[in-house]
Image 1 (cartoon, rainbow, N blue to C red):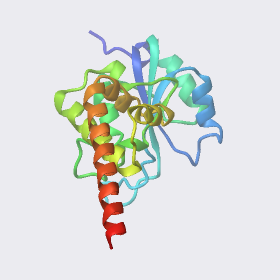
Image 2 (cartoon, one colour):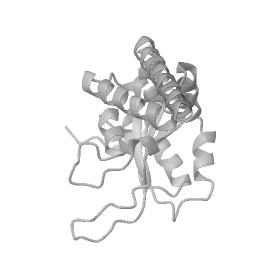
Image 3 (cartoon, rainbow, N blue to C red):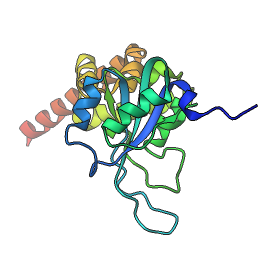
Length: 204
């Protein structure tokens, strides 16, 4: 059987690499206006070639079409951004994790929170998170609660939605009792400490 030409490939999920130095200034706006759900990696500006030389700074972009789409149609869009030719994706999960080099400890570890979701992209809609992944997201949310001093569950949800942290949002709304109990306990603990400090100050 003859090898299928890439022009005839039809997939729903695609990825490509974009170099900011050669992309049009409004490339992000064009991506948003396309209406395509997409995710953009943190800027990969610390990658190293096998020869030891730094790679040119670039973004990895993941595109999700509403249905199977031909290579030619996707390539026409990526060409309008002066990006590389698109590659069909077999694993959305694998590509999304590659954005931060999560499974490549030998490479520079980028911050997953710097991934930009566009046009309603939510990785949780495309893959089912494993138990360990959910626990990791829970731990990151707890750290966030402590770092920015969240004292109400509603504030947590507002923060996650305002910052388009959709994977974290999905975990938070599916674990309302857990996070609400933690935030309430944290708030009460802080209030109790403040009262003790005030009593101690007045007694001195």
